[in-house]
Image (cartoon, rainbow, N blue to C red; front, top):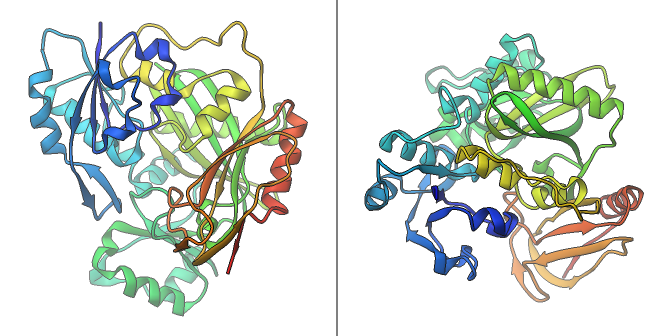
Length: 408
């Protein structure tokens, strides 16, 4: 039986029980409550503290503590693998593999899936469109007119290696630029500023093994995730297949994946189609499956479990997930409800054709602060429908006509 070390993994309920039951599990985590009660008796759970990483603006498991704690569990004569699909711990997992000389599904430097400038440079060098961008050198900061000339009237400043729309600033004038420099001066070398793309944002998610795509799909965002912090309800739904958007993004996404040598694992890519549909633009890629409730939405809609596939690829297991013979498609999509500054007066449920299955994190009379990242939200929902038409009607209603929370 293969031993698999899970590094900072959440949502164990997304994996199939059959797969988890077929491996010997070691879990590195900061909270035992993340591990389901049913899994705890048959897993070796090691509690590791997290530390703040100012570069990624997230908390990661302490890699030295992980390595020290794992020594008794690493037998060179045993088939040991490391699994991670959480952005904040991907580098921790790769450092564990390197230290113990364990199998890695990623060949070459992991930086191309973390550093946004590097990934855009690689894609651009293959002749594919990316946003124009500028990196920072504190000894010689670019003047605002230089930014404006190279990137246009509007630009976006963001961390090079963060996640969840942390610390993103929209630059529309010189005052915005000066405020961004002032607020982030100590860490400017870890930021970039890029061209603002006026268009619709999509995600291209795929599972690939040794260069062969096992599963891929395209979903449309209701808005860029950064607008969640402005109070917009966010949702993501699969694009109609076949359609011009689906075919265009799939073709472009595969070219970007080839440019980055994304040959093994699950990947989450974001691309824009410009407002006039004249061009498609690569934004970024993550070497993991998509987050929040996207994976169960895909399972419901397509019958393919990206969590299972990702585990099987990273653990180098011979089999791949199969769709159950009794599976019936239930078109589903993800919804994230933002928080706003204030006191909660009322929480409202939308009127939907499908099931609106939500986990509320707030309640009436709570005094709350506004959303800062996509995981800092008022609630996450999976909308489960009987037909694709119902799903698209519910998506439009929830993102355009639904007011989820009333504040005093």
